[in-house]
Structure formats: C-alpha cells, structure tokens
Image (cartoon, rainbow, N blue to C red; front, top):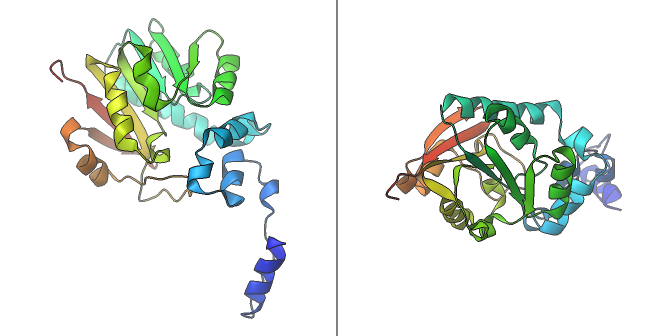
Length: 232
C-alpha cells in the first residue's frame, strides 16, 4: 500500500510520520482529486470535472463560506465598474453561483451561463431554474452566434493549457464597446497542483499586453478588466 511505502521511506531516514491522511477521507472533491495523484491534465478533464460536480459533498465542502464570499467580492467589483449591461455571459459558469450574485446586481439583464461539464450545468439549472445554462466549452463559445455587453470568465484560465486561444474565443463574444472580466488566482500565492497557469499581474500583462488589461489584486486573486473598443 502507498501509505506503508511512505511510512517505510521516511523510516529509513529515522523519521516517523505520525499520520498520513487517506485521500478518500478528504471531503472537498477537488482537493481529493489531486490528493489521489491525479495529473493536472486528468484533473481538468471533462470526465473528472463531472465527477467533482456529481460528488455528494460538493455543495457542503467545496462551496464553502470562503468560496461563496469570493463570488460576492467579484460582484462588488463589477458594481464599481459603473456599467449597466443588457446581457451577461458567464463562461465556465460551474454551479452558477456567480450568476446568482450578478442577477442581484443587474436584475434587468439577460443572463446566460455556459460550461463544458454537463454535471455542472445540471447543478446550475437545479440551483437557478430561472436562469439560462448550456453545455458549451470556452473553445466553442463563438458557436453561440451572438455577443454580450459583459462576458465573465472567473477561475477558468488557470485550468487551461491553451489560455491564449481561450482569450481569443472570449473576445469574439464581447460586443464592441463591451467588457470582458476575468479572475485568476494570484500566481505568487497559488499552489494548487490542478492548475496549469500561475499568473502574476506582471506575467498576465506581458502575455496579453495588446488587450490593455486593467488588473486589481484582492484576497489572493487577480480581477482583470478588458474593454473591447468599438474598432477592435
């Protein structure tokens, strides 16, 4: 067993490991996925995301008070932008918790969420039956055939190997004069093995300088605002 091997390995150095947690005992399904030794690519597969969203502990141990507070913090920063979108698209919407907050902020706006995980969309439709959700990858958003005043993409780009391609796709669904808002973990603080990318404000600016992103740091995250000019 892996546990016995680890105990023996440390014992050969005269060290004793008093307690090794069984990954199956971890209640947070995302953390459990990595603790089991899942590779970054496997962790971010559609199959694994479906398993995470189907986990019975999802709403109690993944969507903690801290995680729900994050959506409120994003909504507060959207309010400071002093925009009034007629329609909003949340790409990688997951459970739809962010759109719940956005609905309070823009009650008259048409709201839509898309995610590549069918299980996440099932959860979102269950939690917010009055909102519109569709199974669609970030790399397929141009298939919607329309554009939005505000496009959101929170905690997604760090999970993608081709983040540059995803950015181009996101911009196709932003209406000229509209805005793209992104959040990613602050790369200097992020240690989660399920992420491909670890952006700092400086590295994000370098990667996407042509888009002139405005970046604010908050609570271990980057809040990124990109305005799509009429002539873009």
